[in-house]
Length: 579
Image (cartoon, rainbow, N blue to C red; front, side):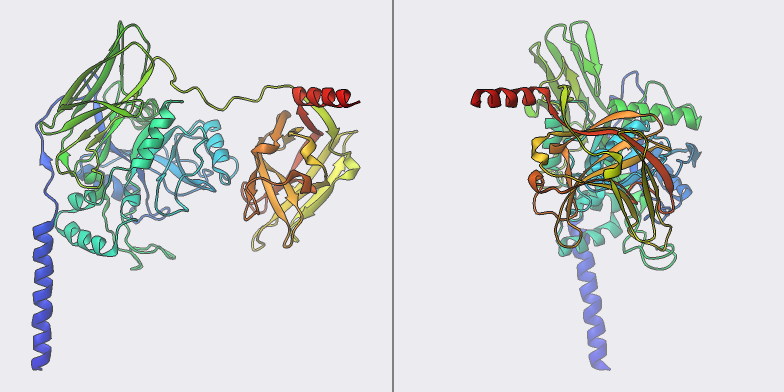
């Protein structure tokens, strides 16, 4: 009994010591700021982007999240539950006075892509990241490359050449993943006492992401957002509701994340209280880059102005500024101790205490701002405010992908209708018939569950593909869909394959697949195939973009191999010279 009493006292003393250590070392409370400059004539509203509910892997309902956002002083929340974009988005609505906008987070082979404002997709969005980016744009959505430098490889964005609309410069779910276990335990204790500040203490300035952002903005417009990536969940999700079933704790809570940081959107008019109209205004402001991020756990409420003039022309963050003379940039923030850093073309060009005025020559440039507070957490320190750019005088680096407009010369017809065959999963259906001299009618039916790995493929034997640089054909389908054009090298277990997915619908359209643009499927021996070893061309429909149980028809016409006309002419000249 005496030993038990000693152990109890020792445990109590240890707990008290740990508690006192957490109190002594916890981060300082957020600095309270006086009201300062705002958006000028543009009203500013605070909100959260990238929030999950129990419809995917979060723990709260829409109403729960909206109530938490209201307590944190937010005006809107953009929900991005995991999905394939086939579910129609909920209409915008107000709950607890908070505007709720429904979006989606789509898993791709190259990372996660969050989107809002898109029409329901007629087929599941998945597969290569570049295809999902293309589909979201076609459906009218605003797409955001999520957690681009997450320590978790499956979450990290990897398709940097795709024309995505925006990028998360900060993602709350990524910031804790590279921290040691001891640090996380310490932060958990701090969270119990001062939640938003404890969460912010895990943040670092994301150097690789901001460097990529600066490089991208020299080529095209890209919007920077901060993603809450809020789940209110600590623990793994199993079947059912993770909170009700005891599989997860609601830590960190939605409210604590919303109090840690928020995006501030500059609107053209105040919110009107009409959900549909207000949601469109918020979406348009996000797409225009009229938004900045502020970390409230460091100092709040933030107020920030960033503008530029060139002769008679003026612009704010997100805008293009025409050149009409020297460029005058002005920045103000309402934290007297803050250092305002003006960044031009990715380089720091001016700093000032709470404000900056800077004159640049009359030339193209991209300006953005970071505002840093003394003793901010992180190595390097996390900025308090990050703006979007002002684009002055056009692109600095016009090395964007150039459409391949070079005319092609047909080298060979791929096959006549009778030379094609079909392959399929055992429970699925596939037939092919000829319609004229060069037209194919491909009918498919993917088996419903419980069948797995369903596919149907139209196949033709090929050789000497290194004589060509593209495959050309015309195609249409009985419904909008994606068709995977695949190239196979024989090997054990079904061979190695590379592919390019193309969009087809009811309109007959000309399609070109360039052989240097195909990507590996699964594990392959190299990023690009040895074209001399490819023995099969396949047109494949599988469950990547088609639901199990679906059936339909695809028409293909004039399938042919080709090369650029200049390359063919050059080869002819070489041959003639040799003769």
